[in-house]
Image (cartoon, rainbow, N blue to C red; front, side, top):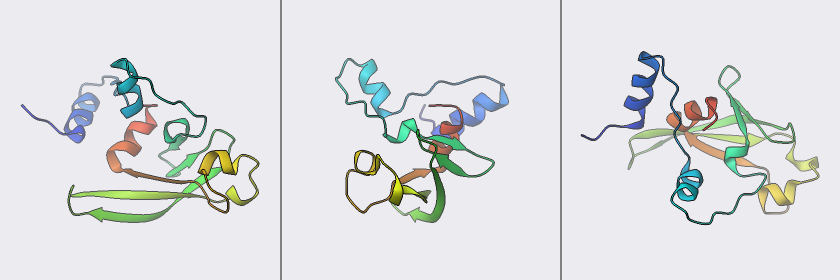
Length: 118
């Protein structure tokens, strides 16, 4: 039986259960693969569902700027951009490029999972 992440999350909510679903890097580590763990990977940013924004490890805010439909997956994706990255002292380490801002893209399921710290 194949179920979607949305169905799994709905089931957990209905049963009032806490689910721990690893992200890709966590799953790879669990399988014994060596994975890089940097301070500014997406999973280090916390998501606030009430404000619909991410907060970086240094306290910077990333606000939602776009909503896109992916025809191949049939899902909406949301894009969040850092507002104050220009003056951030760790911008290069975080974004990987000069003159860039941090951008996080995720679908509805990933944003909901981020609420629970996964």
